[in-house]
Length: 453
Image (cartoon, rainbow, N blue to C red):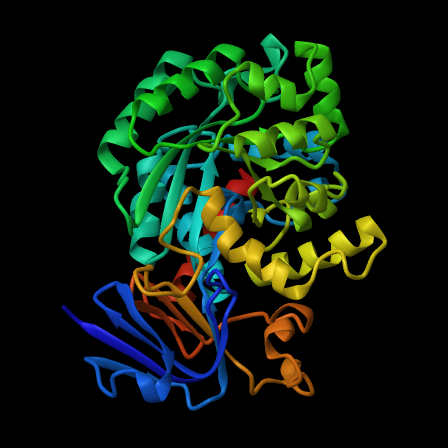
């Protein structure tokens, strides 16, 4: 098996149980698993592949993105949707998204994955919930695999259109029996429940306002008959979302989730901006996870999620960049900074979230939300997923007093190295797995075609 040595690390952020930070450190990897972490002088001197960082980089676990919509990379900053709240934004974009094709799914997925990898994300979930024309989730899974990103694909769905009181147009919804059949097929063909898996599949009916109670219940039953298959949806994203739940179901979003079997440590919900205190306590008791998406929540004026309350109640919380059309970026370093800042504003307390706590959400928090015990920290037996950021850049000048906090507070934009499963996918700031200029050109061409009809 191949070995890898990364040595002379200025500061190594392990995120282990003691939150150890090491100076002049090294990581030794065998195949795709970390074998040793420690001082450079204490680790093997040679390996099949050696990267000498010459004491100028911070190394930390790869970041984990718990919520995204890759296809939206094709529809960023659409003028008519720039200043809308959630429901208006969706209604503006649904007609454009109805023209999405399989090629668009593939290209947008690679573009989103590339942007994530370059900004330090090594594991991402994605919520693809509409399948017009020839689109399939298989297209996305195969495309992402080529980029080297560790991937949790979620089989989203919409089944309640406008004619039945839902938000999406009828032409974008599917039959529920077809959704469940395809969900089972995708799990059988692509889901890997083993430790260190590069591809997993979750079931993800889109939202309470676009699917039926029956589909929510049956999806939960299906997932729990399979091995390691999790459940994901949107919940309590804004006040209109809460009002819809009360009017349609007579329940708050958290109580609705419980009524259809969507609480438990195999479930994670996106946003939860307007989650009630009772529901926060319920999520904490049951281990139900939350994908916190601060930039999208700000962009759509949905509010500031009560993350501090969630963490105090022991709710598993990770970060998500959300859709590239509601953020409008796919940068987890930015998301971690935003999470830190909005927590302080929400509490009117500058100590409400530290830079290191924000990094913990982006690493260990995300790993827990996705149900993984093999990523999110750097220790023997963990997957070899880690990133390195060069301190010799203008944004870190004068920040030597605390280089770890600088990663968040000084707003690092891009990583210099990224390893996923022991493979170097970003090398000196360049993506090694796909031709980025060609990918950008294809993305722009398909975006023009999609938007212009």
